[in-house]
Length: 600
Image (cartoon, rainbow, N blue to C red; front, side, top):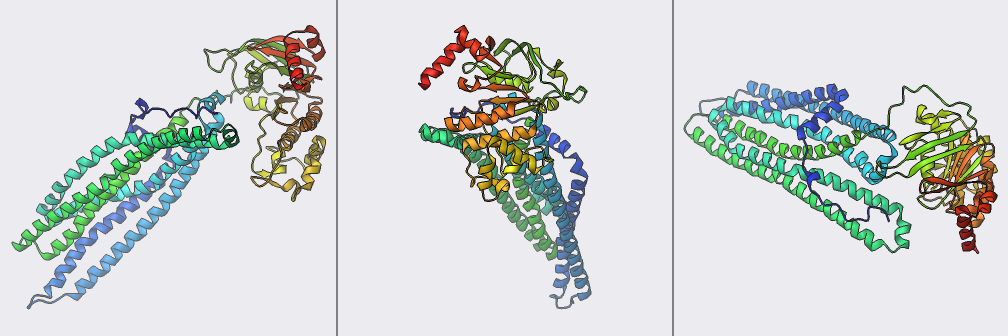
């Protein structure tokens, strides 16, 4: 089972909220290319809100004009009423246009932001060393690409605009209320102060739970991704109950953090509604008393009844906005934490390149450990001539696959050198080193696409004739022709290929790559004996004329190797041909005979 089948981690110091303002500064700095259009959108939102705020005051004036007609000696000035009516239509119509434009601009800008952020994450992934993926689950990384980026995009699209309109509405309403009557305005403000105090307290309390919720969501995604990818193993070992137990642990933690974050932040809305209703009642009482004493007209009360709604509505919106801002801060912290991970060294200054190499490789006193305090390869030295087929054998954990990782520069050496045609690979860019190798691994990686697309992977200029030739060479052409769409058959969940057929596809891919060096890492370990013979014949054709490294547990498959390196505990303990090593009656002979006896 995977490392995910451990008990869910206890939440402690890591859940303490970090600098909320600092995270938002980073996010704003990241959005700097979109800031001009966002600022324009927010200005439009602010202007549209101001136009809406002017409306109630005009309604109050219209009410006073109409009330003049109720007085026996008075008359309604219909010209003034029409003027005010047309003005209201113009105000609200213009406000609608501005708000529509703001919504369109913000939606466009935030979607581009999300697209840019996902692209930057993709670029960042390619710059990270493999050791990063040794300590972080793929599901957690996927959660940052999807859930966290979506949370940021939604907030930037909805909450930022709402924040501007709410703040504008709030202060604009205060100004207009003071313009109409100071006493009623003070009544509304005093009764609302309680709401601000409560909202600030809730924001401070809920941030840590929003951060933990995003973290727990990544844990759940990582666990589900790993269990689903190893579903057959889980079933075979009857580990369903254990997997369920661990999932329930992560799920319970997510429920706990999600419930607390949503409940605590959700308190803001009903509290703000209560404060708003209380303010509404208080203002109505004060307004009635002032009207009864003749200090204000009825139109002022009508306008104030609308303004008090416009005044309390932003408080409710701000409660929701701040809740979203908390969630976005937690999501942004995870994304920027990922962006801040240590990258591989920049190699743009390296000018040396491999070209037309012969394939001579030398390991010179190589020392390496995945973690500094635990050395795996102690003092590895070996020389390989061009065109040789080198087999690396040894017990599990001897360092066989590690040697391949070091040749490909997937990891950097602690000391020593690996030379290709006399040139140290550390002095050449990684991409150029990778171009010199073709790989066939134990795990056959195929993506959803046609068979042809899988074979010509990253080699778009390959002709159909070369693809067919490669498939004929590995013995795959006849099978492909039996498929409904032949080479255009899409490999997905509905297309069933055997493990051997998948392996032959990867061998054909390596042939198309046509690299001077070849790595075969346990390429036949997961196929049956009959299929192994087919795959082995294909690999023999593939290795012709190439310096090749073969890692195999089945020693019967590497009898024809030019040189066999026997490794144990990170060192070469024996080397030679198959016949020479058997004659020595040493470690290799014991290993080979034990397999032979097992087969018998």
